[in-house]
Length: 412
Image (tube, rainbow, N blue to C red):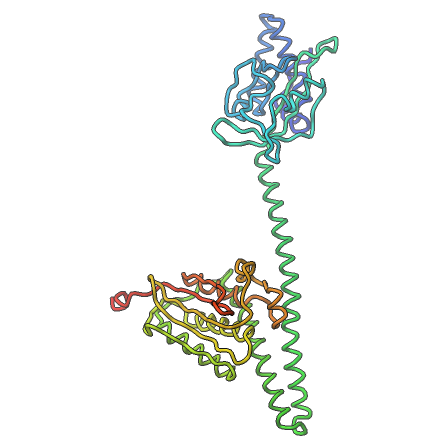
């Protein structure tokens, strides 16, 4: 009989195919046990068992009927239990396929190896321990035969691949996230290139005409071209500011908060908007007027400008935009009411997602779908919340709320 294998030889063999080198080792152990020899032969058998315990890889054997005849400490640790000798097929409490399907013990790889008298390879399973924890493993069941080729049992090596499985899952999730990010990036670049090109083309074309032929153009044509330049410049500026702000909120420093009288900040934003949109009536109702919040004034102005611009874009000419400022339940609330295209139930769950635009919105006006996403990020970055809902009689209500500041806190 060949001498005992070294630990290095065993570990190298396990990495290649655990069933191969251990077949000789376990065959020798089984032979020693069955012959019940004493002296040197028995001590040799003990040495083989010591190798199995020191190996650090889960190993167990069964007889030809599938009853467990031996297992090492590593196997008991993997199973989370020490089975009774004579249990059938496997010491696992429960076995599952990788997809979560419960696998009966009588259909496990060891059972197949014994029933079909063949090695089983390329199989992966999940063992559930009695305490509920789970471990992913790859089994290498191999039949054991006597000198006449008769099946006398089997040896199985269980290699713990839990960490590898988790790493592979994380890698797949990362790859999927990267694919999704690339898809969003491609969509974003396509939208932005279109949305930037349109106003830039208008600004460039009108400016060039005014430069080259301005004196020969009728006064009303010049005024119309200047109005177009101003309108598209505002649109272009809004796109750039929203893109920069969205990036800053996602990865940069948080807003610098300080006490502000909310109605005053909202009123200033409305005045600025009304100067640029003289044909749109905007009214404000602030009760009480001295509602104080801790907020970034610039962010609040941009937030209100975005909501007013959204209402302007999707509302019929001549309809009024209403703005309300109020305080309730420890919050300062601002609502912007319009009589625009409204919202469907489907849109309510997606309206604040970056780059989302409904089919109706696409038909109504141009845009890249980041204005409302920016609004939500701005509000949440200041400890508030935002909502949207259909308005009775048609149109939409966009609102946000920020925590109120107790005036007593300011005096202290």
